[in-house]
Image (cartoon, rainbow, N blue to C red; front, side, top):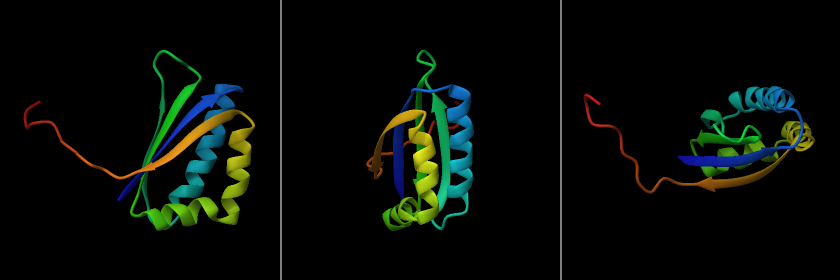
Length: 100
């Protein structure tokens, strides 16, 4: 499994960014290898967001973002935000103890 983390700085209306991101999310939902994602908004910086997405493998992620149908989504998001995308693999993972 790989984790894609993309930090966004919204330069346009937040509502427009969230709408465009929702459209992009729907595109990814149907791509092979997509597992899940969460879009998070910074609690103290309203224009700062982070997308954390999990994919089965690097190849599935790369196939999705190079698919011709993804280009319009990426272009639309660039009209209202800048981003810093990176792909990661887990090194350590821990869950809360039972009863917490």
